[in-house]
Length: 199
Image: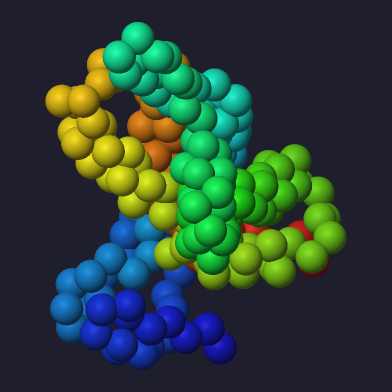
């Protein structure tokens, strides 16, 4: 028999069936436990595809152009990692590389790997494992923290150099919003339910 626990107060009870578009709330604390959406997979798949396009733009083009006393320099997303490595901070460089580029990319590709077969009704290979990877990587794909670091650097460098935002900075900001929308739209219960039907 299916049991469900409230994420806020840990109340455990039998899971009732809910109709499309309805929400299931905890009787003790009122937190939303489940929300059954008919287009959860389709909406999330479109958001993940948009996020992958924005991720490519954010990594392929310069974030900022710095003009310091007539010397211009373009900075990419990977530039911070390279500079940390050059300053003999390899551990910090690897950490920044993981949380700003590698883990968000793995999370997006894992979401795509789960959602694409579900959208077409295919029986994908090891889909539950990929869904668990998405759950594990959720707190580690911290692109918003990296964006905050970029904004702090812009404020500090504004008095020293002329800073021109480039296309990748806007793509990076849009990517953070799209990834947040994906996380908000992804209803794990609906995904697990559809995964169980494809086995």
